[in-house]
Image 1 (tube, rainbow, N blue to C red):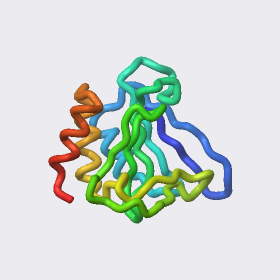
Image 2: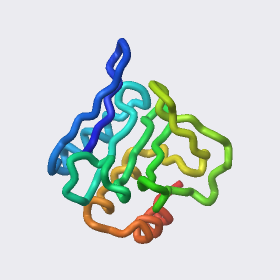
Image 3: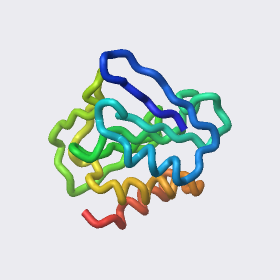
Length: 136
């Protein structure tokens, strides 16, 4: 697991957590705040950093605006077909991440449900099916 940290006063660093427990993954996701802690990356591969895995799962955002979930290199992107195309900016502390309102989850419980599926080895197409069963 790779955590992006932007401490007050500037700069940034990556925090690498090898073989995190589910409790640690959940803690990192619940700690996302869209500014100081804007991104969690997860990989199912044995890599030094999740940034080296093109199929890693990215969780960006926080409770105030919402959470975007997507695979690195565009292999998968959460999408709520009933959502709007309104542009939304996440990751306020740096360059930002832009997506559409339809790409956001507002419930951290829904985020955790999808992340659990990823950690459990589900494919991105299976995650799309699971996402379709979430309550809007």
